[in-house]
Length: 316
Ligand code: UDP
Image (cartoon, rainbow, N blue to C red; front, side, top):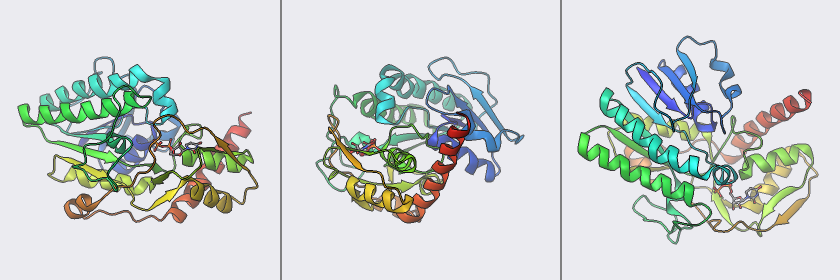
């Protein structure tokens, strides 16, 4: 099985590459290394079944062997990063997806797209089921991400209809774990790195907004099961365990033993007030549900960031 993972050096991509190699697949990772890091793939570097190609999906695809499967994970995903690269984010989800779909048609490859809970915007329905159509702004500060993911879902559906290719759409809810860059900007990495360094934890707003965080291994298991299934509609993969950002900060401080203060900063515009997946569909279709508790996941993630922060100190 030859599998292409776009965004292979990113947070989700690198975890996925490790899993697919362990499963015995031949894996080609593409990444332009704008938000991804080659160091995420260090453990696979010398594996003959693995190749990393530095490539921007906004250009024509490089020469590749015939592909059996494509996981399209390339896209900035952290709000500060997609806001820093708005046009690139729109294009990788729109034009990048189109290029890969053309290739899937050519090779008869099965195609999985990493969509997002952000297609639900600042949701009025709670928890969010796949048939909820969302509450999204087409011009707001998150629009480059939300709307390009929504467009990609529509494009994929149209390609599947016209060309009969096998497509899968995973809507990923907040995820954390190893391989997310310490300076990614998302809340779990920010809080842990700040706690380890003894810096104030940057709390946006009152901290009463909620999210439901899953550990990355659970996400990867869900993605692989979805790829192996025969279901082409969107499927939520996330952990329904919902908590406030203040609860998260308190837990991070306790688990790191940090004396950091909590600093309250303005809430970004259009920051969703709450988010929790309804995972009935994933449970029924894939027999999937999250297995890693927040405590266990945070322990592993804190260990990861301690090694990253030590690495930074060592590098000066
Ligand atoms: N957040 C925070 N401090 C940070 C980063 C994020 O309080 O340093 C908040 C953010 O405003 C949001 C929640 O944490 O309410 C989750 O943010 P994240 O960027 O991780 O993901 P998303 O907003 O895309 O769900």
